[in-house]
Image (cartoon, rainbow, N blue to C red; front, top):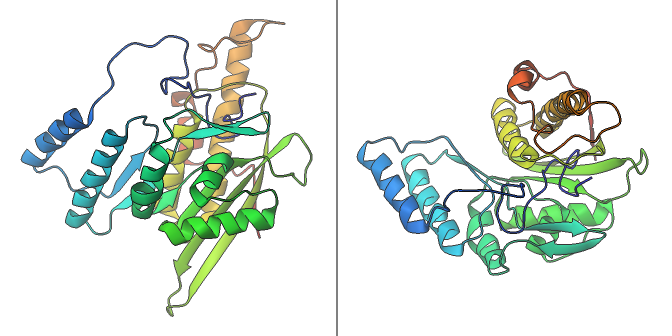
Length: 284
């Protein structure tokens, strides 16, 4: 299975582009083109947003331009929530590697993460952002605390190689949310999830994870446990349906192709909107 597939909740990412496919066509938007697009939105007075979600990019100028736009959007709506999936690298056979230019790391650390309300790094990304390793749950909590101090109130480490209490066939997801209670007291809620590994490679699960976490934290802004349970359980439903369909199309004894493993998102509309909780989070 791909180290970035949930469930490690990310698909396989190409080191050249974010398509995850052997072949791709089209253009890559530049920072100047993004600015032109945003100016068109501004001229039409359609720039008041409640949420912004960002993911993979390889270009520092483009990433910096996105941050400029988010700052302007936040001046128009101070309550805007920015969700960032800091896609930079992963682990392979225990070793970390970056599949974006290393110059992006300081941009994420100095400009992106400080603006974000919610971040969804994998273990390797969390480690390089925090500047420390996490080999135990205690160290993972310390890493999440460092990331909190950088800006985000919510940190979800989407996949890690920490030992699972359920065995080697499970991945560990960790989350931490800092919040202010009614009386003004600040508290931190931390959760741990054990997610079954899947022997398949999917494209787009990372985007789907971040989008659904955004949606469920909107519905449950002060309950990270429920938001993560609904996000991961919905993703589990989608992946289960996708594998079943792919195997049926491939035929007995044959491995499904990448095309057959296209995520069955539309077919899973009901499970996305109202997921049955199949994977529970534990408060730590």
